[in-house]
Image (cartoon, rainbow, N blue to C red; front, side):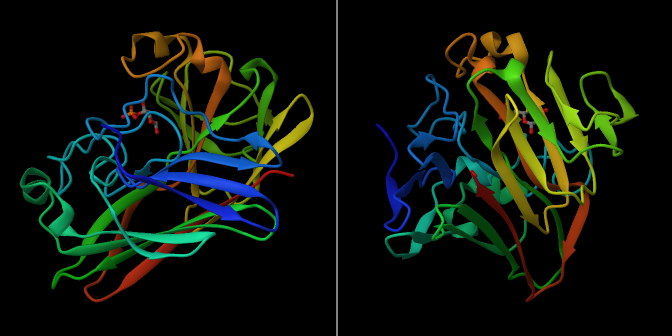
Length: 277
Ligand code: BG6
């Protein structure tokens, strides 16, 4: 059974987005007549697994924590694997909310904090997609978190794709387990790629054959993750088609290179804006 999903439309630009309440995952974003997100043909949309594609939100941990309060949580936390509630909706904007009451007993036990997540997704007047995650600490003690908007961008052919805005940054290369300085003004994925670029101050954009297809503005999401599983995607049960890695690149805006603390009764909003010129 497919989980409940709903659509947003901006009447001015004709842009649309479709969002699954399971994992508050934007699964489609169409602007200027083109689908901009990659959704695996084998993605599970029935709530049995995080959705492979679109924009799954990652919270409260990026990857797997080896120690600390997130150590029992599954990879990328619980936000992408629970059913959110719509708490506000108009034609072009919606807010989805997740609190401990929405979590399984297992997840509650794995992260023992009171919190509230309000995820505001909207399409702006020029057709841009804005995703803003408001994280509130409703507990009596502080908590630390990491978060990331794990965006799978659809591309025509990965061989023509270049990511700009990363030059000069010392990044963590998770494939080769080392740290390296980015020397390229235009970064290509030519094999399995899994990198965390911390503190990226430039505007990050994706080009395909010299045309800018995406501009990614970030607020409070200082880090950028670049991921493409390459041919390894054929070993992922929910990744299709088999050569789907050629049709996608994950450029993920995050706060993941360190932990971020929120004091009790405080909140913090982080966001990304996707514009397709
Ligand atoms: C990326 C990570 O953000 O997500 C990768 O940097 C990871 O290491 C990828 O493989 C996909 O993760 P998952 O849990 O959705 O398969």
